[in-house]
Amino acid sequence: MDKFQITGGRPLEGCVAISGAKNAALPAMTAALLTDQRVILNNLPRVRDISTLRNLLEDLGVDSSVTHEAHGNRIDIEARQLLNPVAPYELVKQMRASVLVLGPLVARFGHARVSLPAAPLASVPSISTSRGSQNSGRPSTSNTVTSTRGQTACAGQISASIRFP
Image (cartoon, rainbow, N blue to C red; front, side, top):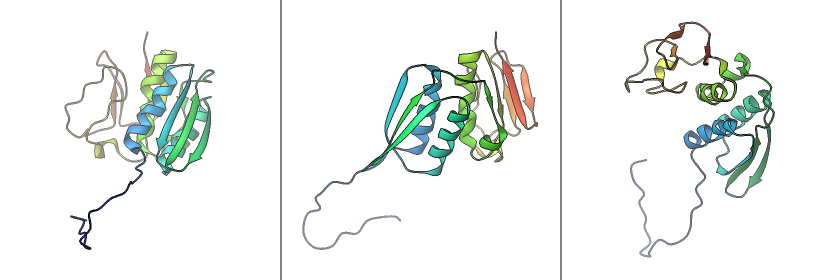
């Protein structure tokens, strides 16, 4: 749609409720892994990627709950007792954004293992999977994850495992 055409000769008035953006909500949800305190996110959109990421977080040991509100969801996330730093392929393959858990898991555990999603990372213009990763802003040509020291941890394999001291 290129434009809205309003006819009727009267000024347009009223309110429109807009829910939050999925691409802003997903990193906020994974950032909740960085603390053992309760994180409350409001106005999250009702889309499948939000519920998929919530399932992934729960598999990692996060307690969460969803409250359906009139203009979006409210999600309470509490990562007090994370079980382990491994995100299983069965959940990760469902969406590319699941690699966002890699950085927070490395921050909490010092290492993490996150399978690469089924969709090729080359189709994502910019993606950072760990602290200190460099990205030139161009699409990646291979499924490569590098550590902060620049060592290649994974090149063209199904999963990446990164360990930090």
